[in-house]
Image (cartoon, rainbow, N blue to C red):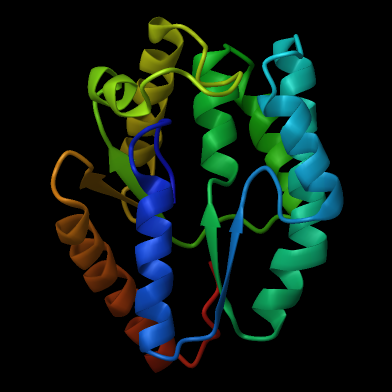
Length: 207
């Protein structure tokens, strides 16, 4: 689940969990950064306003948290046949640290590959919302990333759209300005079809 801060992705992740439970589909739900003891500590460093980090330091902290999460949580869950529903993953780093902060995309892609052991998302739901509307929804910025200026968030937004254009088969774009229930219904239709296709192929649900 991806999108700029304030787009409603966490709400959609919660709604999607309910759908998976009702349909008795095995899954785990995680967030980035976080999901492990080390990852949650790194999350505090990244989001607390008291820290001043260079763009490169920020990137490497995200990658450290991702490496722990990938090896300790994601890979074991996939091996056991569960869907992994992740609130942010590799695309966030490309959008925020790449397009937002200007770090070389080739370097980010290489680090993502190393951090995840080469396992990237099979399906991504991108909630598309204007930077202006997202700022209104967030209200007073709560964390270090949200406090970054309008033009930073605009670059991030454009970065997400660029990712979607490059990978239209993986990245599904949804209008985040409509009602949450409508978004959830559209996401569920897409995910159900994806799961059905994987089941017919005799493959485990890997995200």
